[in-house]
Image (cartoon, rainbow, N blue to C red; front, side, top):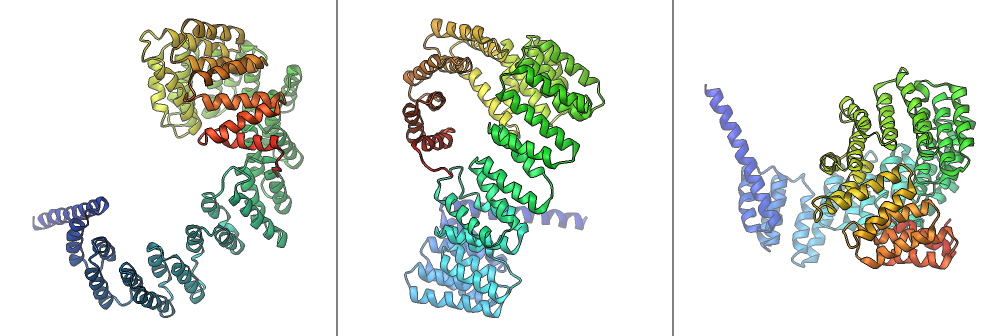
Length: 590
């Protein structure tokens, strides 16, 4: 019984102790330093070995300008704990706050001399200087400590200090020195360097980083330098240049082709089809691995689907792969791509369904079956068979809970419900997806949710939203003329409705697809005229720039891109607009 009582007393004591810490910290954070100091004083008296309490108590006294109390605390602690030499820094800083620079300097020198006696004190002394923004002293401390003890490594702290000082060249050089000594640190330093690098190749830090790497590459070829250059070019979306570096790496190591394959997929996602082709042709020339070869051929087909107007040629390319590798679990991705091609390019959904139903009969894993069912649902939606599509999507949701395919299926359920006009159920699904671990799905869910919620408030019957969803479905089904006509009804009969801007934009996108650029331009201009504060205005300016860029109307394109650069600095189109503006202006973008 005594043990039980003692146990509970210990628990309550610990809880009370923790609560005191939290209360003190809350006071400290709010700037109520007298209240915080009174609690930290008690906590420090109970545990005089806890330097954290001491630091916070000293901080409170300094904020209250009770410098004498702070000094006495630190001096007493140094008498009791002379090995904690970093408190000389705190004592010096206490003098500095009183503008007693000479006395402060004396204490700082004591801390630095202590490094010679205790080779393990480098971090604590360097950190103390750093915490008090005494960056030059902190640099000196870390460097001296490394000289005294070669087994220590404070290069990351040193680089961080250079960054805080704004000495970016020395910061980059310090990180590169780390790579020079240990190649395995290459990926680690990118986390730090990435804070200073942007996707703008003309950014001064990008240029500086590139120059420093090239200088080292010329002095001594090293895998890490190629890796760093490849990473830099990828940040700038210069995938062709990144490919050159990845090829150099592969030729030197003859290792895995996986990095080059990943680069090819990224290049495709960003519509750099020329680089995508170059990369996957290179894979075909250098790989003997069948899955890699099939994947390369699939991505070359993807490029053909996006760039070729000869649909029969593309179809024949699919058939060649099936003849060579057959239809099995190894070629599921190609069968999915073929069904997509048949549906959305050749308008043959029935044939696509036959392909997918045959694929379902193959021996494959649950994830492959899930992907097939999602694609089958897509084809059924294209064919207007919503309830059948929902069954397939729901099966994937149930069988693959928490997997990305289940999240994709949930979004498809929401989209299909939206097409049907069942907006409440669509919103319920989208609400869950807004927190999706997959950014693309989360963004799509947010966009669709906003269309529904923003255009339901003043329209309880959702008449206009139903018309817009119908037009959206027609566009999905590639029934472009019908979609344009439906959107025109909204613009004519419901002028001034909240959905007017989305309607103009959706219609303009279809006009572009049909190469009716004058009509598209007219719509984008109307969006700008309606409300210059509208969320779609920067998108409209960018699309106007793109239309004129394609038609070689240089001055007009420059005008629209420039509008984004100067008036919409937070636009997602800013980087591309700036890049294209510079290209049209004749800047060297190498």
